[in-house]
Image (cartoon, rainbow, N blue to C red; front, side, top):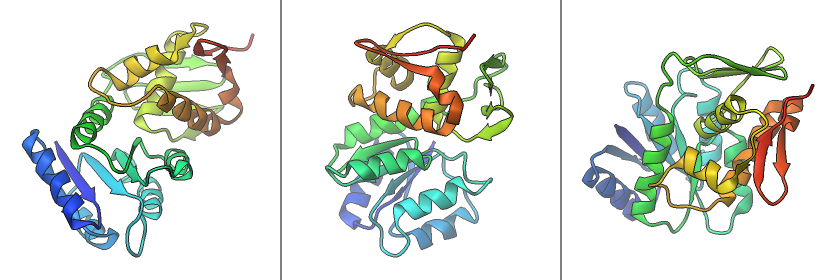
Length: 225
């Protein structure tokens, strides 16, 4: 698996690349959006670790560009945001990022999140399509439609919706969702679930209201009669 790190701070970029290589990944670093784009002309990474604060074209602009490109939109992206910048986290998830890391972050946390996102990006084989209340999810194609309109979801948003559609009416605790979608090797907090549910509801439009908050428990998908 190949991970590309887009980070303008050479010391941070070097230790990211060193850690990824030491844990079995192929890794390559880029100091700005320009050099990253140039490399994309001939290669494709399995995942991109993208810093928000970049010289020239920043990480958010680059994320939007990738998610609007049919050839690049399927590449998982983990954003690196400044400590305490809640807006950067929400904005990144809204725009299609699969996850985020808050600086300063530990290298083992970075590796755990990379593994978790890559694990979720695996194919679902010939699993049956799931339908409910105007939603249609095709696991093999990894596509989602809401009342006939295509909805672009990140890998984790897709997996959350797949879980809900496979078990309508069942209430899942935040801890259950965190365990099922992010896994044992993921270092984080259950609040991450709330942020992903928020962006998932928003992307699903009117269908998003089917994902209900169960007070004191977590969330469930309730199909209207």
